[in-house]
Amino acid sequence: LLFSFSILYMMQRVVSRRKELVGAAEVASMLLQRSRNVHSTTQRQFFEHGGLTLPSSKSLWDILKREHIEGHSTQHVKDIWQEYHLDPAKHRVSTVLSAAKYRTFCETAALTPMFVLPVFRGPNSFETFALQCQPPLILFTSLEEFKRHGSSATPHLVVSHYRELEHSHNVVLVRGDILQPHALDAIQASSLMHNAHEYFTDFGAKREFVHVFNKRPEQFDFKKLLDSMGHATDRLEV
Image (tube, rainbow, N blue to C red; front, side):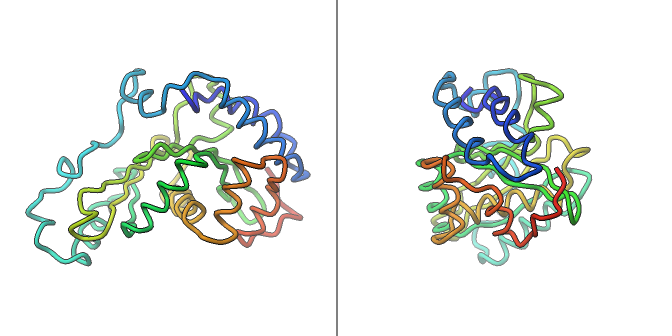
C-alpha cells in the first residue's frame, strides 16, 4: 500500500511540533522518503483487494440513468449531479470539473501525487489531512485517525472522478464519499476536495506548493501554505 498510513507515522512525529509552525519541510521529506520504501501496492488495490470496498461504483451509469443525461445540455448535467447529492444523510459531496481541468489534475498527480491540506475547525484551530492521488481516486486521512488506529486506519474521504461525459459534455463529474462523518462534515469535505483540485491545477503559486512538497521537501513551508489560504498563523492552535 503506497500510502499504507505507515508513512503517516513519520509525518505525525514531526507535525506534532507544528504549534510553532516549523519543521514542515522535514514533514514532507520524511513522508516522501517513507513512501519510497514501502510496498508499491496502490491505494486502489488496497480498496479492491485488501478487505475494503470502494464506497462508490467505478461506473457513472451505476449511479445515474443514461436517459437522464445523454442528449441534455452540460448545464442540465451539472444541475442533475449537484441535486443528486443534496441529501446530507448520504454523507456525500459533489462538484463538476471541466475536462481540461481534470486533465491538468491528472498530469500534476502523475508527477507529484502527495500533499497535505488543513481543515479549519474554528478561527484559530485546524487539523491536518494527508492526501494521495491515484486517479480516478483521491484519498484523504487525518493524522489523528492514524494516532487512534495505527495501521488499521481508514480514509476519512474518498473522491471519485467520472469521465464518461468527458468528450460529449466536456465535463468530469466528481463525488466525495465521507467515510467518517462524525469527524468530517460536508462543508469540510467539500473544502478538502475543492482545495485538492485547486492546488493541483493552478498554474501559479498554489501548484508550486504541491511541486515543492514532492520534489523539494526541504523547502516546503507549511506556514506559507496556511497563509496562502488567507488564515493568519500567529494564533493558530493544532
